[in-house]
Length: 191
Image 1 (spheres, helix red, strand yellow):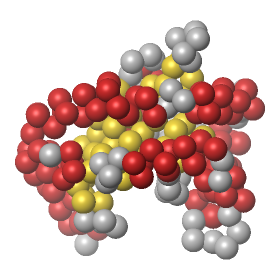
Image 2 (cartoon, one colour; image 1 turned 45 degrees about the vertical axis):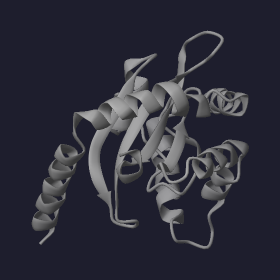
Image 3 (tube, helix red, strand yellow; image 1 turned 60 degrees about the horizontal axis):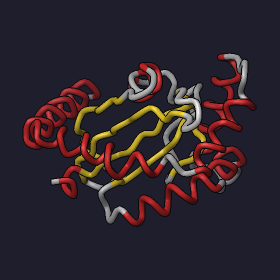
Image 4 (cartoon, rainbow, N blue to C red; image 1 turned 180 degrees about the vertical axis):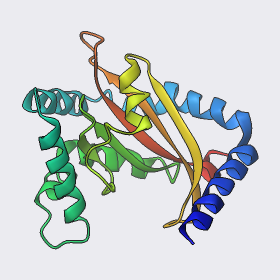
């Protein structure tokens, strides 16, 4: 049954990508360049990424895995210290405000440090570590100007077609990559 569901999901993704077409990629690139990139140029975002990068300097993979496991275990739990810390910080407040002002265009946004660990976000993500995923590897992993546009997928919780778009965040002073951001773009609103 699981393989049928996976095949159906893949077929829907191909169908949705074809339905929205190449014009959607142009619109997304325009959004990144003109509007969305400004969300993460805020001093509060840059300072928080730099601070978390310094705090995680030399972090081991086993520590990253432990943090990710803790995050996953907190989903749906009454005791959520890691999630509360991240969702309650100024970066998350900033991202929630920006998402709200986007009038449904962005259904989720989260910022990651140089290890792919969440710094701030508009809602709880399914995991804390994004470093093993294409959204991080093909944005931050390719350096300044790195962008990754995922496949259009059906968000089962909302019924909307969304695409995750990620880009590298660079230090405005040095130009060096310091983290990445992922936006979930609602394709129905984009069109």
